[in-house]
Image (cartoon, rainbow over all chains, first blue to last red; front, side):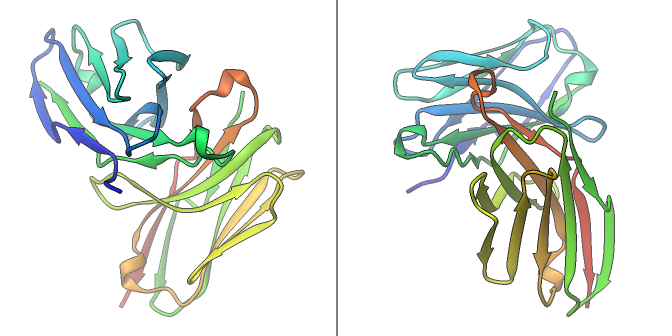
Length: 115
Length: 115
């Protein structure tokens, strides 16, 4: 099976702009989680989607949003970008229906730089 | 609130040494624990997953143990090689509906193996 894919891999944006990142999970996986990784805060959970529904959300401002489509692909959007949003954004997929392991498989990430 | 701590923060060893990475967590009500490897600027690669009912898992030169009651896990790497140099991350998945899709990560251990 192909792994988790994320596009684009690199982005440079200006403060105040908005950005949309995309994640395609492993075929058959219906749960997609998003994380932000920064040198200071480490890996922090943003939100999780399952069957097009957001089931969980981390402690991030409303500028961070996401959605999931019927084919399980997910997008996250950050509006009104701030310098502090510069980070590696990782998505992970999980095959919940396949058993109780809840093992998460991560994509390569999108490196966002805000100038 | 779950908190995950990894010790040491960094480790530098000569090739061939056996080494132990430590992970502790504050809330023992976990569903599973995953160990990941991350190379600079890359995504996360899952190394081992231990279910809460298990005591250990092995894969090649890697062995991970879990003591849920004391909130500890160790990752043992045998006969270390320069290719093992990376950041190793421990993450826990809590039981309960408010934890959908959310892994809580430690800050990682940066491992350098010298030839």
